[in-house]
Each structure stands twice: as structure tokens, then as C-alpha cells.
Image 1 (cartoon, rainbow, N blue to C red):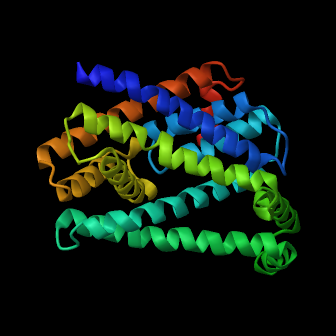
Image 2: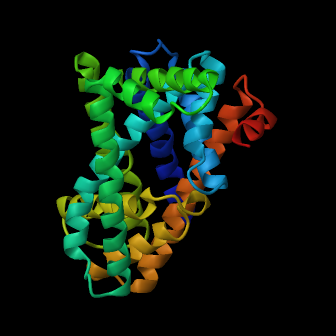
Image 3: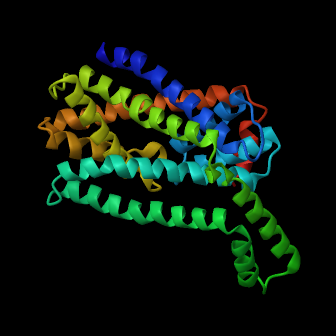
Length: 300
């Protein structure tokens, strides 16, 4: 009975999280084109569905292609906004992970894996940040460098690459400042500190995990969220199965939770996430202008 109650209470937060992501994406897309919120929501939901069914985070490319197809905007510009979004999330996850790594024993196998994962994530987040800043501040310098690097390939291919690169740089325009930057930051905070946290708090309740006061439980859920974020940030199996449960066990055992309970909670909370996001994507695809066969061809 607790499973069904947990599903009933958690699913709305996963629906809400996709709407918040769509709202944030709308502000990221604003310098490129004015996009309808339902269209952004559908692309976001389908992207998560693809991530849950296919490996290597192919959902990021799937949702970019879907928005390009439905919104008739340049694919390179859409990919630029997705890259910027991923960097924003990586920075947030790294901040949350600082607390988690302090509470996981580096000597243990689980803690060591999580530690190495975060060390891999650090350059994976900092390098794109540096590249994005250079592209945004000195776009013509980046174009000139690309021309030199591509000088030996045919001219028509050079022109295509330059056109795609300019579109990508256009997709980074949201970091130029202004009111929309405030909304991007606010939506990121709501996304991670509220919509992503609530299912963990509900999981504590469903499994009878007592971590003290509400504020202690809230802080613990943020630590756990940071650990999960680090564990699933790198490309992995469909739906992040494996690293997700690893992070749960590594952190909750450190909080004094029985290993079997911690692992079981990781499986159940993950399954509800997987089911909620996959069903949303299936429904969104059903009501979009894109067919599944087109999506599969685009993936290939």
C-alpha cells in the first residue's frame, strides 16, 4: 500500500518538474525564438522518455531534434540551449555534491566510486563552462579559429560547420543577462530544491526512515540529491539504473540506515521516477506532430 501511495504522491512532482524545465527552457530559447510552453513540455518529456529507454543520454539529442522539428528553429541553436541547460544543472549538482562527499567514506568501495564520479564530473562541468563563456564573449574569435582548423576540408562543408556553429552560439545568448536570467536561476532552484527533493522526502516517509526533524530530513535529501546527481551525470545505462541505486546506498548507509532498506528505497524511488517520466514522454509523443518512427530515424 505504501508503494501505491508513494507513486500517487510522487508522480505530480515529476510532472511539475517537466513543466518547470519547460518554463526554464522557454527563457533559454527566448533569444533564438519565441516558443510555446506546451511544445517545450512535450520535447522535455520525450527527452526523458528516450533517456529512460536508451543509453548514453540520447534523450538530450532527441528533445533537441523534436523542438527543431515542431518549432521550425535551427537545430544547432536548440542544441546550444540544451548545452547551456546541462551546464546549469551540473553546477547545481556539484554544489549539492559537496555535502554528500563529506559524508561518504572515501575508504569504502561505494564512497570511492562516488568520489571518482564527482572528480570526473568536475572537469566535465568546468570545461563546458569555459568554452561557453569564450563562445559568448568572443564569438568571432571562435569562428576564426574554427575556420583555421577546418581549412583543409571542402569549402561547402566549412560553410555548413560555420553556420551550425553560429546557430549554437546564438543558443547561448540567454547568459547575456536581463530579466530572463533571473527566471532561469529561479526555475533552476525550484527544480532542484523542491521538485527533485520532494520524492526523496516521500521515500523517507514510505520506508519509515527517521533522520530527525523535518529540517534534518530536508538537508539529508539535498545531500542525497547531490550524490544521485553526481552518480547519473555521466552517460550510463538506460534510465540511470545502477548508479542511481549506488548513490542511495552510499549516502543512506552513512546516515545509519540499514543497507537493505537503503538499496530497496533506491530501487522503488528510481522505479517511480522511471515510470512517471516514461509515461509522460509516451503521452507527449502521442499528442505531438512527431511520430515515433521519425524520432527513431533522427536518433540513427
